Length: 126
Image 1: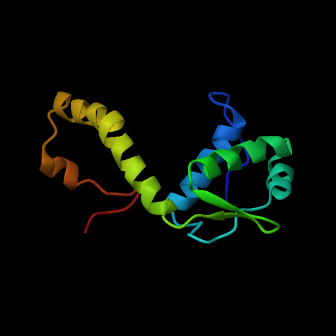
Image 2: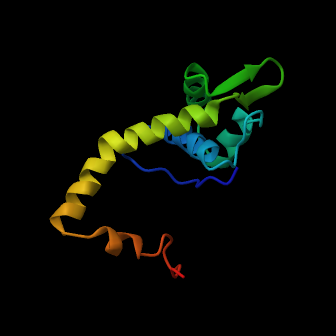
């Protein structure tokens, strides 16, 4: 599933698993209609209790991001990517952007200085 198998101590493992699935949806690794890996497979790969994986998946289902199909598993719901993108944009603009803007202003960076920077580490702007 292309997820890091290490966890941090700053939040519960089920939330980290949930956030990783959200990241995969936002990055279009998992698309609408795609099946999520089975609870058993994820539990085995990450060496966590299957109930931990189930809790992460249940939170995704409760949020309407994935849907359960009896006997088949969990699948990315239609509209999940759009919903997540809107939520992430809103969160960024309300929580992160004010700090970024304050730093830009404190350092007196100009738009030209900001836009002349490479967009990816190691990438040269042409």
